[in-house]
Amino acid sequence: MKSFANVKGHPIHPALIPFPFAFLPTALLFDAGSRWLARPAWAITGFHLLQLGILSGLVAAVPGALDFLQRVPPASSGRSRALRHGLLNVAAIAVFAIVWSLRRDDRVTGATLALELLAVAVLLYSGSLGGTLVTRNLISVDHRHANAGRWRETRITAPAGTPVAIARADELERDQMKLVIVNGHRLVLARTGNGYAAFDDGCTHRGGSLADGVCIDGAVQCLWHGSQFDCATGEVRSGPAKKKIRTYEVKQQKDEVLLVSPPR
Ligand code: FES
Image 1 (spheres, rainbow, N blue to C red):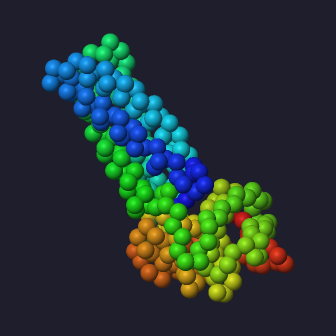
Image 2: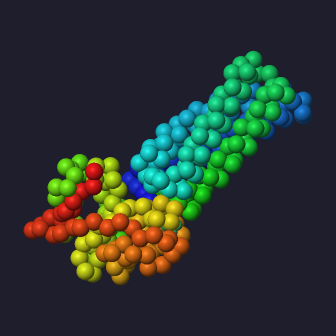
Image 3: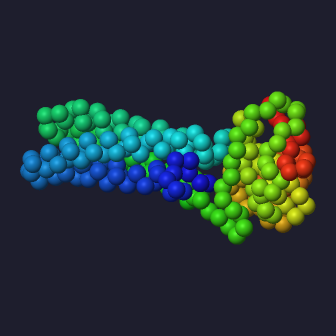
């Protein structure tokens, strides 16, 4: 799913995280070297790397938090993974900050080294979770299969039960989809060979975003583990999902597509 914090489509968070991942473990190496190889000057380099790592980690956290809030599907396995990723990163940076405050006189002690080692271990584990968020949950991946078009998303507030326009009639081509957030509820508008269809955005397997999936031949496929659902009826065409997705009535009226009964 295309990153929310991006520059011309390029995600910012993955571009920034190499900095703390380079600075902070290297700070540990310099600090350990200063103590065990009797090179006291290395501690100064380690201290500066520590500062740079904390600072760059805080900067990288901002686009990461935006992607978490705006892009990771709610009530999904990716959401809990992203939450663990974020909290562990905050914990690691907090431990590095404690080390930094203890190191104001540039002295490396056994205690500060142990804390740095702990924080680096947490950082590496958290980084592996971040990698899974990209490679499995496709957060920040702006994939575009044939004819899918660009990522489309709109937010609408509407009285529940009153028809509301959610797209222009010519906005989507066949097999294209759009994420529509109505009153905070995420649903997908898809254009199939039989016209428009609308259904819940959340896959019933582990909550993957169907708006970020593939629409073809009247079915939508979740890219997390491959479940397929019929766009019109919501029935499962192929697992691992077992439960159908909820569908919504839509109709084309003049040059607009209307959601007949918006959810609360
Ligand atoms: S979340 Fe597993 S197939 Fe959709």
